[in-house]
Length: 416
Ligand code: GLU
Image (cartoon, rainbow, N blue to C red):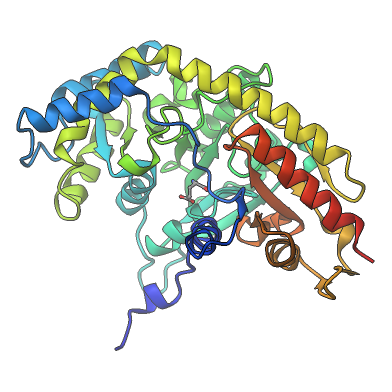
């Protein structure tokens, strides 16, 4: 079988690979403490489940409009206008997609082209470390990824000056993901406003086609005192921001696969229509009986979201304190999402109790899984200094956090 060059060059998702490995071990009866997938451990709130069951019973089992049920699109447009203060968003600007991931795929496909012979590719400016799928999706869409390196010193955030320097006439997309997966940190509204000003200036001069893709899937999970801010709320660049979000993280609906994208103004309408066209030729529409559930989530589940947010806040401070108490590990205090991003590079060159040499984050993660049955995601595929890190998702119980960190402490202490 001759597979396409595109797919042969495609890396499998590291986050899903570790999560699947942990699930496969668990299915064989091996007790694994998994900190791999970014998947809340809570049940989907009952009113959301009830709405889906009711919808199914009411016979909503047929094709739906490609961009989504009008009532749900309206609820999303209202949320983005009122809660996120993004101007120029109407229901027509919203496309409901198979999870946030497919929204990103559609937007990249709609805005990037593979280079013509003799042409330079379009650049995707990607602050790194970044979630594992932006880079492969950019490549699948014909784009060239330009990594903007960050480090723990700036809480893994790019500076306006750094962005200014990176933008060229080939810059097509800038990815912003705040709160960040995998870093667990957030931009302040002031920082994003400065970044928006850089985008505005660049768009008026050297990069007229620059668009910001703002992935806000973790917007509800914040606990560090920094308010979430949508860069699309900056009026001067609103029409060149596509906002991505979804139900998975805020409402504990990972398996439902419901996400969305939204543009603003005339340009945003064009992007939404392009993504709708692509969706019409690929997935058609999101499962028909989940729309009303998504509407209930967005309009009526603030209390449930707040309860989960509090639990994440508690877990964040617990896992951070435990990690800091282990000599050889260092990490930045998480302020949003549910990830602790741990620098393990001080341990490189050491050997585990079972005789494994730890030369990389991957070695660390593999040895930890084999020897102590704790699954973490090695940071190599997050890009940049991610290679010195492992990511732990703390979307799990406090008991699991306590036991997992205890095993990690034993593992690290035994390194020679
Ligand atoms: N976004 C989650 C994570 O980073 C789920 C898996 C994935 O899509 O990568 O773990």
